[in-house]
Length: 117
Image (cartoon, rainbow, N blue to C red; front, side, top):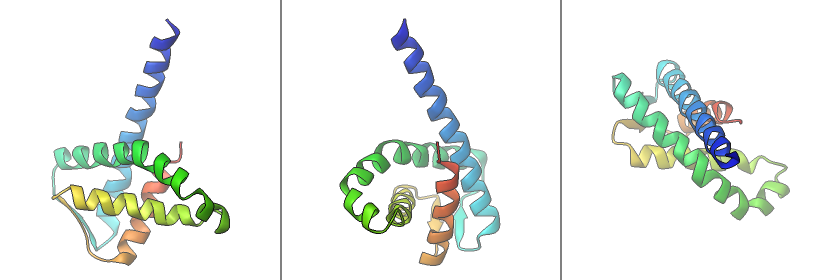
């Protein structure tokens, strides 16, 4: 019975992460000129799911691999990891286009804020 509760907890956390990633993508699309996401709620939902999955599975692995760099830079290397995850989402999604590094940097802050759980 306890494992069922754990599964529900994980599912709730993943659903919350999808919703917050969708909000972050919407805000980035709305306010950043170089951040383009194809119109429609379906595209936003697909982008949010992909971004949430990348943050759920890729980010912990990257943080373990780059732990010495995170320690040396006092946590600032997390920004690079978040930029890499957003760049990977840009590469995977045809509907997403990030114009330049400045936009990627700002958008990575938005998605990082959304995914602090």
